[in-house]
Image 1 (cartoon, rainbow, N blue to C red):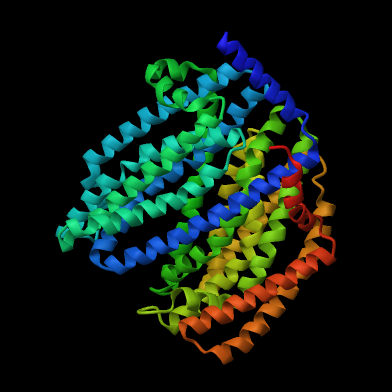
Image 2 (image 1 turned 45 degrees about the vertical axis):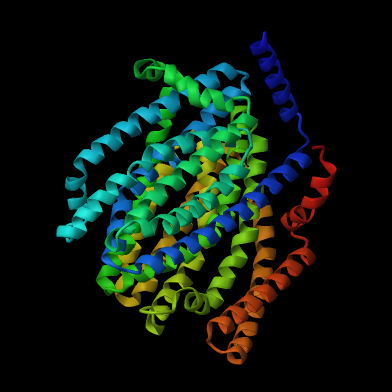
Length: 555
């Protein structure tokens, strides 16, 4: 009886969601995106604090090098198999079953996948712990004696996070399917805070040469916290926390693999995993050609990439993550008009946020790099090299955001082989252009190759989706982009000239740099906000309506 009542309740919720007014749905998605971006920004700040605390303990010593190498392998396996690939393959199938009213089949799929993730990643973890010396010898062939032994010991601790991250990816996929993003967005903040707390509290318990173990234990504790928070949030979905904790224990591997929907998820995972692997090779291309330029070039490109990823993580990842379940639902309903409109609106929102970010980086790359990095061994020459790389990364910033959303659109349509094939093309273009440009242009030529490949990928994605979906509102996109571009140009001009004047007045001390750069960016941001409102950019008015929609919607 209770099961039937739950099914009826779920069907009523599905009908309400299907009949939801488009304006209200757009407002809810916009608000979710804003909250997700704010939570992500907070997490990024916490991550920066974690790096500062770790640097104060370990600097760039052999201990820190051992930790970095030990974390590399489980982090790579996580990227390929644990969170991103699982979510991209699981969410469309799970959402489709819910849309068809096949609630029990959807829950069975989730339980089967939770069981398989635990089994497969657990076996992989055990295998790595046994073979850690052999694996790490391939990763760090230059490490010897105590440093190598430390790397192996740390890797055995850190590889335990793989199972936890796989389960987190599954739980987050379930939450996202029910449009619950808040806990997922804020959990990295608590991950960073937990690591800091364990490091500070536990380090004194170890001898001076072994304090790095406190850092590794902190990562393990933080990952447990990162899993616990979204798992608790499952109570607010029909799936429930009890199923997540109990149902997988009743399953068997053979039974799980016989499920047709499980096989669909695994088939969808394969191209996603290949695509993520190609992305990692793309980064390897930059490192390879950078090493041909100078010993400093690979590190300079990596440092610039970290800054480049800040607006990506806050803005485009937030939009793509929030829209992905909606795109999957619309695809499951065969509502191509709704899917096209949602995707097109997301593309315009990404340009609204990332074009001004790119403009700011183009004119203020040098003071940004100086403020973030220039201290200790990082001198003025290093700032020049990193700011050159960051300048060229800026051109790719909006296009990379668009590519992320378009890739999620292919996943929602359950056509993951398309972005996988395009990732291979992207890799080839990056390598060929970098080969042609690294000698005459150095670091700038290598990073420019990434931009050329990203632009070509977006063009190909748009062309393929246009054949699948028909018109993509490209005229409206160009109309909006031209006005956003005009506002971004004003931002760039105001930011640069304000910074130039204040830099001379405030000097190059830390407080002076923060003041000059902060005021310049704030002034440019105000000018940009005014410009896009006056130019009647619709996506700007969506932001202005957020508070009104929040007050008008029933709780």
